Length: 308
Image (cartoon, rainbow, N blue to C red; front, top):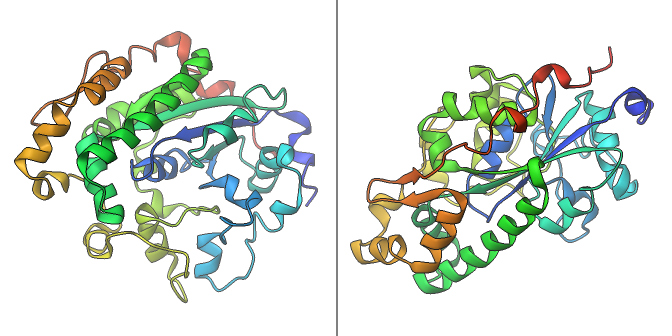
């Protein structure tokens, strides 16, 4: 295949997902990448990082040493990353879950790419529960990290103008059809309920956490790749290949921890600036999707057509 031949007649669209770790961004990336026009690349920047590089999870499941789609991509310059991915996948929309501001910034003003940026936030109580399982952080330290990371992402998204938006994992998971259809529109993709069953699509990329469990089980692996880790195998075993919402924080946090986070001044102020608020029942919105009006939404028909 001529890697760059595909891009001679189109301008690929790169959708960068930014979030703190353990915020549901991999799941959102899989769903967005489950259309005939899009491909989910996982944490695509890993291909160019010698310390973080991992195999394509799907191909590793099948016993292959290299990815049948993204093989040797790390040998090419970073600036060719998305043109190569568009050529190899034959998809005009590439969804990247690297979660890194510096990586997204490299491509923001590229004349060869149409860039979209999605900032994903998760209920801070749920995020804390996930972070504590893995790192053992106390509330004060965890919330300081969450605020620092999400303040930086908020500033970056605002700098992108109408090409950036903030969404909430919990709201998407509570009413997926309503809110994913709008997020798909923002990305210039046609929405279908089939995308919610993302494990029925083939995904080549660098993602290997809990949301990937369903893909691994659907692939019928020869062996589970060594780089794959869910952080809670029993939970994902119970919920594999089905739609679910992660609400473990409700049983894992003490009343004191829940109240400390729900009333944390800096956390509440940041959430308010993003259009959300915490209640005892969960996450609520102050101006849900007000920034995704018609001027923000790229209609599906404006997408370049895949070759073939």
